[in-house]
Image (cartoon, rainbow, N blue to C red; front, side, top):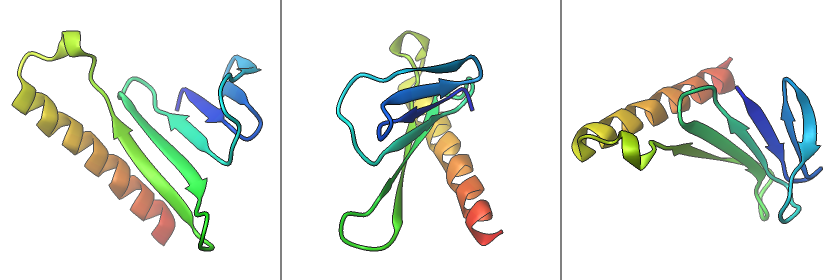
Amino acid sequence: MTAVRDHGRQQVITAQGRTPLMGPQGDLLVLEFNGQGCSLAVRPSGTEPKLKFYLFAFQPPELIANLDDTQAELAARLARLEAGLAELAAG
């Protein structure tokens, strides 16, 4: 993980320290993963006693040679991230 964006405390946390986070304040953490082009957002449900997880994958447009291959790779990244979360939840 390279950074945590804490929207509640409005700060970005990295190994180098903490810096201010601009933008709206709220109950949201975004975990950014090292070199994978993936991130994970976590927030509480507004109506139920549970957490909601949102998975994101990204590939810069200038690195896309074949759209179908890129979509398959991004889907695989998201599947690995989802499997890791499921393992932690079961653990």
